[in-house]
Image (cartoon, rainbow, N blue to C red; front, top):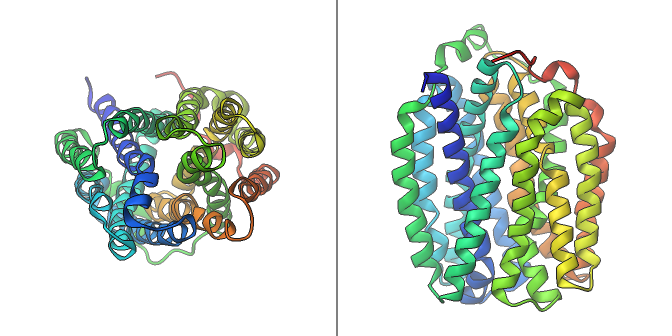
Length: 386
């Protein structure tokens, strides 16, 4: 295996690990919520701390990555993300859960910007779309977490035990995989050495769209399990499959998204994917049947699967030498949506039923579909034979 292929495999590994660790937390949300004695609204407020920690991790990670290189940042971030993943499992009340989520969020944000920056480096060398496949592996990690979490919940294992095992696995994988990473430090510093660069306005527009789309993803990640269990009365092991259905179709869609993007362009993928995502979330929200709600979450996952990678790729390719910094802005605002944005859904449950609150991500998906013109064809890497 040559160095570039090994680097691609390593990127797949870190994406899968991150998706698995976050997924293991997500499927344990109802159990942790019950153990800590909090309600949906308080959980929503605590998720703000998860998003805040992630945003801080991404902002710091972007600056550090451009300065010292992805080869050194990614494995350290992987270990930190793994170690902190166990903390919510030990929470006994809202204060300890809030602290755990803040720290876990920081580790998640650090690895997220690092691995996405490395994905752009690999994509630049391949000179064709490959970034969606990495995000597919992230989703595959979520599928594995849903299946394993569903089984461990049926065994009545405590969150501390399950999350602790996932944490130990993550540390080992992060250290073993580090040797295959590429080091693009000098390449990234070339265009930043002349002074501070003004951030292009299009970066902030893409960041805003990432926030809208990823809040819609966050509605599935953080609330699909609680929706099936609380609104439709599904058993815990069945409710966990709501997240699994979303993550499964997200995986399949991202495995195909690079080929689709090469054919129809990133703009069309963002536009039509967001529209399909809106239809899927609406179906899940207002279904009176568990099976149709599961189908709705599956449709939403398929639609949204290719949208976010297009925004990340465009940000990473926008300016040579500032890939990580621009990536941290788009990824950072996006993950404020996916991790903290669902807190808004929790707050809305004070005023309306949970399924009605899902109209917010539906509206956000529609806005993203109408704003897809922000992406330009030149941001899709030119496809050449490899």
